[in-house]
Image 1 (tube, one colour):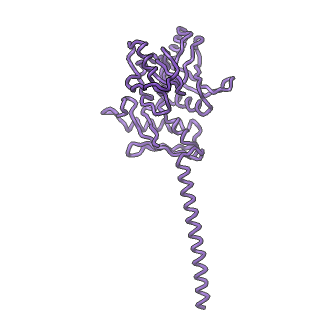
Image 2 (cartoon, one colour):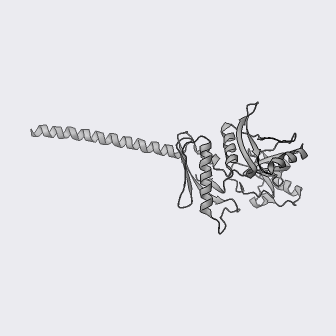
Image 3 (cartoon, rainbow, N blue to C red):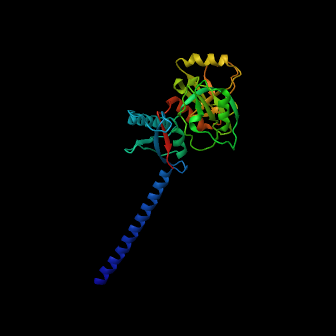
Length: 298
């Protein structure tokens, strides 16, 4: 009897050990899979991104005394959630942490989707005063010299534009340029530099926007204006046929077409868009620009 009980205890002990081992392995696999989903590696199976928050109203990103930072960040978080939903990302979670960070988690999609839609989305239409190919060996230009008041000589702004170094790094001016001032900017692809006049129309004057595919197969963004811009844009295009006009998003030039004829109806932005980029831009223009700047953490 004693040996039978001992054998049964041994058998049950072995079975119990196997069950514990299997549970541990399953737990480990679950933890690894959970980390993979949260990492935002571009697999399309979910992503998590943390953002720091800065003011768009100051060159150093600091919020001015008396600013209701919490209100602005909450509004920006809600707008970002709307943008994500508008782009087919179901149930995005956008959380404002107690330390001021904003954390975005999605169950489907990629880190790139989140980062693209978290751009400030500040649009302006500006006249082109000067343009040239970007110089790879340009000396670079301090961010405070990228803007100047409207009486600054065009030759000075052209000189500054040619000093501008274009690249893929973070643009410290992005979304912070003053629409009433002159601006020197890079093209979105970094191949051209521009000197631009004060804004003719701002993104706040856009009624709606949508992504469309042209007869040439390329994706574009079509937008309609509201308020005074509905009359201002046709009048401007009629008076400036043959002149280039830049569509500027977050201080970078998306495109700078030459006006061929007066434009009375919807206006089209062309650029280096695929379907996702066109839809992202249309969503940003429709929802409006974020009131703060989100910078993703590595």
